Length: 206
Image 1 (tube, rainbow, N blue to C red):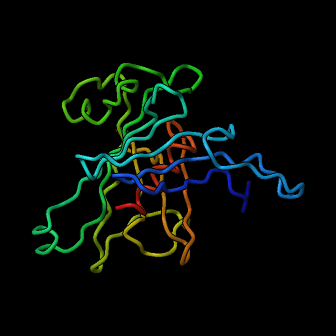
Image 2 (image 1 turned 135 degrees about the vertical axis):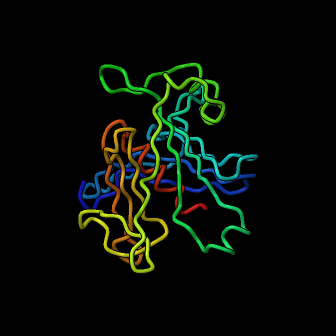
């Protein structure tokens, strides 16, 4: 799939809060000029990402099932305007919440995911056995700049550059700028491509 689109996200208009629909375009055959219509009824709809109406720094990711089952949730920790004015713009911090995996590495369904309660349950300290929680890696501060080691995969400074790690410190996701309009996104289990791409999309919506 090098240099070919696998998933696209389309921001919906006329919504009260940010809402993106995701579509699988990996089966598109450009040589045969076969195009998929990007709508829910075309068979390539994956799900949607929605910004919370009350918690403006929170996003919920849903799959394509009619039950609106959650696939992930992302919670950004935004400092106050006064803090930013006094201390400057700090690196973005985000918590990613995913369903646990079954023995075949598929996301498990549970009460928390089915009832759109992943963020509330996390904030209330409930259901920790039913979800996986990842946090952004804190950058070092050297020479007046925040720095992360991306192993050469990220080459351009940006507030959007980030790395997420698990409880054991293992790198699970990294995303960052490599050109004016180009970014690299690397991920591993327990993230899948849909969840990782949705996380990256949130960086453009803040």
